[in-house]
Image 1 (spheres, helix red, strand yellow):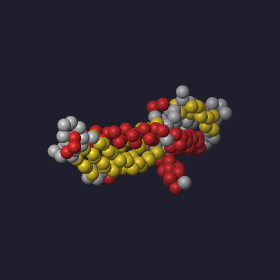
Image 2 (image 1 turned 90 degrees about the vertical axis):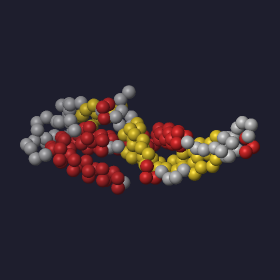
Image 3 (image 1 turned 45 degrees about the vertical axis):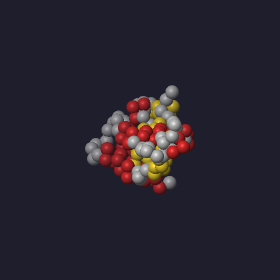
Image 4 (image 1 turned 135 degrees about the vertical axis):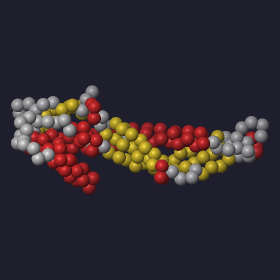
Length: 191
């Protein structure tokens, strides 16, 4: 709730800045919808574990030659939202209805919080080392798993789309108020 209230307050401030102190316009100008969409992104924090293991092999497997295991924890930030380039706002009709076409939410970015990355725990067999490439591969695999987990979380994707709808709808209504008109939003899902 606090996030939603803060977002509405930020939106109101941004819209008032965008409106400026100029005279009222006669036509609706929805050109700043890109900024509103960027405000509507949802950031989710994930705690993840990167791990990889290779079993001992070969003639000296009883010595553990070739065995290696790496394990490290880290946090990541997944940003969810709608693709701004797929949003379209039609001009208001005679009844003040504004049709807005909006896509489903998607993952916009995944970032590793480097400050959360600790020293990896490792276990190796006799005369076996873990290379930087193997550490990097373990992290890449963990990030892929984090992206898959976020993609499968449909509740978060729905929440991100609803957040975008709320902010864009408030923006359209506020633009109408700036020119003394009342607008109603009609949503059209993009196929």
